[in-house]
Amino acid sequence: MRLLIMGPPGAGKGTQAAVIGAHYDIPAISTGNIFRLAITKRTPLGERIKRIIADGGYVPDSLTLRVVVQRLEEEDTKGGWLLDGFPRTVGQVKALDAELDGHGYQLDAVISLTADETALVERLLKRAEIENRPDDNEETIRTRLEVYHEQTDPLIDVYRERGLLIEVDGMGEVDEVSERVLAALAEKLGR
Ligand code: AMP
Image 1 (cartoon, rainbow, N blue to C red):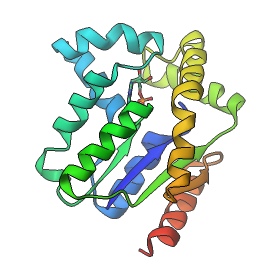
Image 2: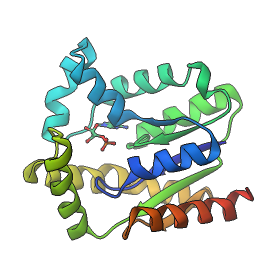
Image 3: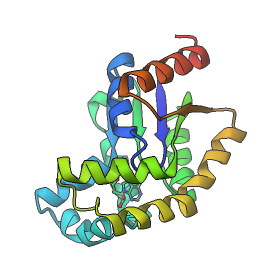
């Protein structure tokens, strides 16, 4: 099974990705987590991208693609995967299409978590206090939402046109959202 989960920052992608990954027994792969780990470990990649992430921009496609392609070569991805936070640009969609084609794979579904903008900012500010993420201050949050709307929103239509999109309301308690997501996936995928 090959899935994507999309949604604006703060919509709860990471939390729901973990639930879906466990449910279908596939790895949930988050480019954001890979980048944050690289920054913490101070790898050459981490050093290159830390400013971009702290400012709320997107890591260039070339670097992002390298990370994703490398991760998808690992053994645990053979039975499928769920990508969390990738693709985020039109270029990344094309690259993912090529990667899938190269392996004779197809996407099964794309989950889009929707959320109210005011609630998103509130959630992100709360998360900033708890997780101490460098990109969760108010100014960066605004930038991240703007970048999301400009670069990533259009991808939702791409996947809708392909008949892959499942839109799920991401507001409410985590468990409620998980139930909605799993029910919507079960309906779409028949399992
Ligand atoms: P996330 O944890 O998914 O919210 O990602 C945190 C940050 O990592 C984003 O704000 C971007 O700076 C960067 N990032 C994560 N995934 C991507 C991607 N697919 N393309 C570009 N930048 C990304």
